Length: 475
Ligand code: NAP
Image (cartoon, rainbow, N blue to C red):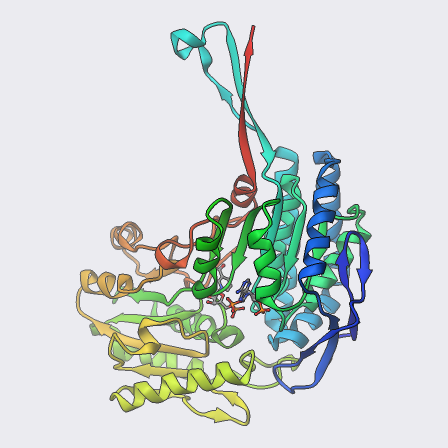
């Protein structure tokens, strides 16, 4: 079903702006036009930054920021189905997953409101040094300034929420550029912010050519922080180009999971089948590399493969669908090419590996060499690999053998093994007896190595979006 939205303008300085040029948003499933969105360029980006600057001259008190955020969470609840349908229509995300995303965004706003009400500095124990005797020292958390936010296509609502809600909680105005393929959820969110009473200029949403808008966000010194979620290729370049800004990066992964022989294999088979293929693998922490202790390799296969075969591939708007389309044909063809490369190199495609109509089937590959792209790069498609290992040391070495470091997981019933793995896996997060695709919105979430340099989750993001100012008072 198409979204109810058919035409959308941009939000700049509290006005809905029609630029006279349009971008078409198409369904990744049917190719049909879902909506047209006004197209921004450099001039609109400058106007949006001007508006954000003007807004921040009159700070909003914390209670007001919190009330607005709570109201948005409530509106997201009231319009939950419309929001989910919008995500489904523009991203091709199966409705089941789109509904979850809509619920999670409510949670992101709710946790951000808590941060708005509780954000404080610290008391400094001044008389702990001789020179400090007779002085009171404390820190204030000041909003860092205008936040430039750039978000990807794969969570078009909740990853936008993870940028704008903490920024508003911190007292920062935002200029947001959502992904061009999926701008509708962001614009719907902007509408809810306006309805919730957010004054003009605090949130500005621009849709248009990435480099044109991105260049201004990088170059304009009034933008103090860039928060970027997307590919490493784009993210690290942004950081290089903006050495004097804070540039927070949430990037990709090639997500490994280790299955020890003592794990509950029924449970593992179920969880991995869901988490390798949900939203056709287009999550930054989609299970991609599965390492199984050799003694239970065949047993796990016997449990996992039928679950993969049972996944429903089809129209994302269908209530039964588990696996829908990739975001575009180019992405689909790239993933097919990587599968073919693995096949040609002697790997075994156990399930899938072909098109079903226009859709790529959920695909499981065994015996793929470590240096094949399906293993060593981020697939971002419905593909996972299975590899047998002998010792835990070997499994950890294989899991760590990637430039990425976002999340990893281990399944085992031994506490000692679990904690050893948690300490040795070089990732921002490690899940134990849960797929590494797991995330709730209050967690500190982010990567090490090539996967990024920050943590999202409102309590962490708000700290990034504020600066500590020391105040010393002579008593
Ligand atoms: P992408 O191609 O890097 O795009 C992300 C955003 O950057 C889009 O808004 C895009 O705009 C914009 N962009 C592209 N070139 C730009 C430039 N030169 N200057 C400024 N902005 C630019 O990534 P994607 O394909 O949308 O998303 C997939 C990637 O995101 C995967 O690697 C995935 O792992 C990662 N991801 C990470 C997390 C996390 O939290 N760690 C979460 C989700 C996704 P246009 O759409 O207009 O091109």
